[in-house]
Image: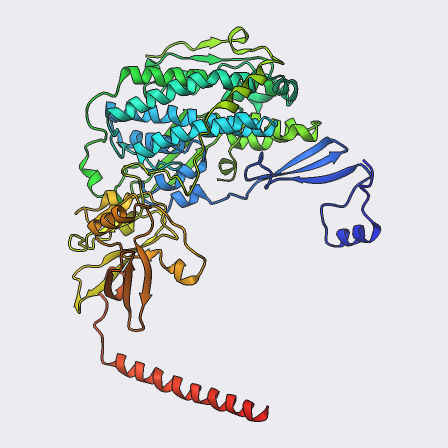
Length: 394
Length: 227
């Protein structure tokens, strides 16, 4: 590393202003990674570099802090749906669903079967759409831009379906306590969904060819960012990242909700725990999601109402929930996503706490995994951990 | 009923790396692109896409449910005067700088006065007038639908909002017609009736402004003389 030495005057000035860029020695320096970098989305990492190796990484989140949990205490129950779904942008249905599940539990409602079917389908569609988003990011990070462009195009189809079902493209604001806000637009929509599922299924082979079978992908990910089982369990790693170290934990199997007990799917598990294992686990889960959606379409939506019939729902701004508390969690593409809600009997929640997977993946685990990694591996580790910056900041 | 987790391991999940397969992507060179050429082609929004609001002023009872449920606090109740008559109930005024297009306000509306259309274009030039455009009392749904059908580009139905000194607002719609009304006040409670102090205040303002202008004129004249 030549020419990294800062001139003497500049160094003194930097020391005066207490700037980070003061070099400790010739080859050691600090590097700000993000928040403009595409891989970090909206948070940054301060890397203490020794040449091309990372000595220490400090995560620097907070660019997306909006105080969701505090804001949720100041708004009526239904209004919060439009707020909390911003916690995870690629799959905004997950916060909606856990919130609604928690309120349903406190209210003691039995959500109608049709609403349950729609909710399950929407969750799976959100997962599929989030996988496409992940392929887009991951493909771009390792330099295989073609796969990323394809994934964006396929995600567009899912967004179109969401648009017809919910009225929104990214933020659906669809699942509410007691059911869903609108009925399915008709059989045409179901046919379109089946077409889309079949279309993406036929395109998976192309993804395999260009991205997952690609030797470049293997070269970039094999043996990068390795974590072992003990480390993962200690740091509360969940989701595909945990399955990649050999623990078959999936909320859909271990604490089933909605229609998942009736659905048939497999849980992929690998033992290596490196970036490659995480990628392969995710690849297999895309297949499984498509399979689940096919099963749901074969079942067909049961007839009946799509919303709970309750006189309390006539006055939504003053809709009161009895005192009590509930915990609900679902399996998102990032991991175990949960909410703990306490109600004190008024029309606003007393406390809403979210347990997001990105808190551990994006802060503690990332800092550990980045130690000793090369600079070029930072985006790979980031994207295979697959964190969601708004969930870290909350 | 819970099913035991069907775990699959290496034999199914692992795949072999290939040096040849990535080249198969070349076949896409001979396929049509999926992207479209905006603005020559356009995407139609889905029916019931959550866009701009509409309001039937006759149906609206001014219950402020929409203002209470609004997560972004974008709705303000407004007292209007149309053709010299004050409306009996306040009507919501929507600020699209804050609106999140969740349409909970439409869901809670007890009389079905508030509705929405598929029009969604929220882009303007950068001038102050253009930015003030997106803070309006929604107009009748039939009028908005008519405009949508006529132009078909899903833009904001109002072209210009003219604000007069006495609180009169004139909405210049895109087809040339206008809607004129007066905003008397904001809030759930009716505004106080206009007191006779108002005209005096106006005259006082005029009195104040006139001497200032004169002074300026004098100053300018002095400057000119000096030059």
